Length: 130
Length: 130
Length: 130
Image: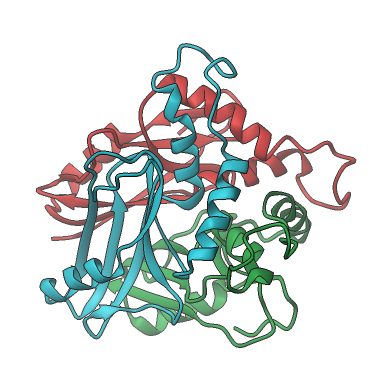
């Protein structure tokens, strides 16, 4: 993943479906997780309007931290909010694989949520089963 | 699942235990997830008092959104809060299966949390192991 | 786990790595979960400064509940906040096992988050694969 903006939500369902196909697994589970502590992987509707609400909501619950407001010996103070936002949406998703496909409900899509973008990041996909 | 009310918390441990029994799996893991983006699956004590607190708390952190407060082109604005509430409690739970049973601590119970009820919904249970 | 303080964050990565080694599994997944409803297992950087921020943030979002503020017939009112804090950080983590090791990003560490300490508690580690 490389997201130029500081924050973004990217639908990664097609890439993960491709991983499932390549694995040849027809019955099992897929683990999809961010390998970075300032990015999330989560499931939701693919609605742009919804994600604008998410941005407002995440900023309200886990605002950017003014440097002088918190404990001043913390490392990486300018990305504290990114850690908190990612905890709200979660690090990982586990999805059932049935008949060689992600076993999703009609509105379920996988998203990568970036809160400290601008550099190369990785998402891990591990598929187990038969 | 069909919950007549808009919101509800339902203990689904017995049904999932039954799924584990039927699967014949004695050692492995069980994935239990909501197939809808406005419902959660999570673990907690089975205490009615606790769930009344949850309702208050979820409404405080992810209140019902007045239509004019947010971005006006969003689809399904009247259930934005249901998406946010579900993210706070989570989409899925993964539980160890040991000796043919859910390997839970003494106070752990599985709950389905509905935030947009009144219609038929599904919970997926996938069990892998031997 | 036995944490003398009411709240604490403990890096449990070495113990879980040891479990993976002992299991002999080289390709698969590991489930790590709290067996208590007032404790969390989650992934983050191992930065003491970050955890001081977490304490402030969790207290803001899920404060200790004054006994008279909520529904008075709730059991265990004095630990309501511990349930809510744990939901924010999550009950469990699923990690890929690759080449016989936890397949973590550079900054990923496993943490046990205690919100009602002072007594003996358990973390479950289940490893499946081959």
